[in-house]
Length: 574
Image: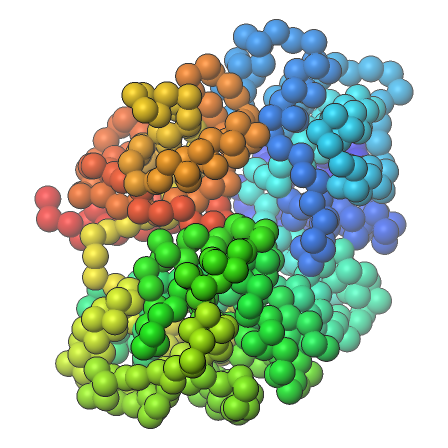
């Protein structure tokens, strides 16, 4: 573990990606295979391979207490160290004492991580964490804590670990990086990918179903003219106000995963039955939306009642029925489909959903023209509470005027706007480009990460209701969050109560009235306009920011960047 920690220090000390990759490659080659496999997972900022459902269930508050106890430092020293570093791992590295006999191996740390994950109760987990950190050198403890919090903060992403594996075991052979990336995507296990690379067997990797991989993302556009400027042959769909979901179907088992790759099947228990009859194993991409007759999505606020629930009552099933609107197929019949053009994937999806008991589709809509959009109707069922699988309607537009007509009809149905997709595009997991576009008309919004919280006033005394939030600084290689605003309105009392509990459990530094928290909660915020300001370290400030909604479907890494902030600022009238 000492060598791994020293390598991480060297990686953090350089901003050059090629140097970072070389450091990782050299380290991995110096290890035995078992140690290298676990190290690859750790260097990706994870305690366990991505495909596993295993989690440590250890929050920042528990880690802070253990570090405080082992360091024997007073509150003032701990606060000063955190203000200096802004990172609990770095605090542990500075304050924990060095003693003779300390030192751990990577395999040993991996074994203890699994013991912590299997242990129930904060007291028992705390004892295991305390023992682990006490036996580690301060430098080892620094990176053990960082791995446990899922945030190495050394400018190293999993994509660079993939590059290092290709460099270490394939000698930079042409196509080797693509083979590593494909194997890791299929397996969801960077450690197992490393093992295949060592044996020269990367191309033997098989799709591991029930392991979600990245969703293809869309870029925002401002006008119908822009929407038709990137490609000539476009498929046009409504942009639904729901949550993106990947459905995995195999052997009679069905699971749904969100964009954060968390399983959300429990929140929608009626949907698996609707897909169990699929005649082939498959991975589908679509949107879960609250649904009503005659076939239209309801606002996100309605769907939100279903999110995060481990048990959904019969009453909730009746009052908030949902539909899974499928618009893509990523795997079917034992074959990965993502390299095929959207035109071909659409045909395969139509065939896959053609069964009478599965396909609750549209009448004459899937290949419609703009003029038919306003008359779009969906098939209905006697029991609206019955789960439905809907092939999302697809239309074509050859001119800005037709695209504008489709947009107006989509908004008239209560949907957010349009998705415009290149029919010749392959599916690029986790990538945002110009092959998929999204068109919305509203005041500008940003997806931001909460970095600090404060107790409220008046009726909100005793709850954490004032949120400071940040965007990613893309002007450096530091992958740091820079604050851009603060908001306290927009959430319900129930949401604030639930978030208060989360923030208390995930506090990094307790400053009394204010708390610095783990940067994991994403909000969508709206604002009237934006101005230059030295009040926040982003250099910008939002005027009259308010919270539109929580975004549990997004990871912190998917929040907006300073580049997006700059685009909005430059576009507005000054």
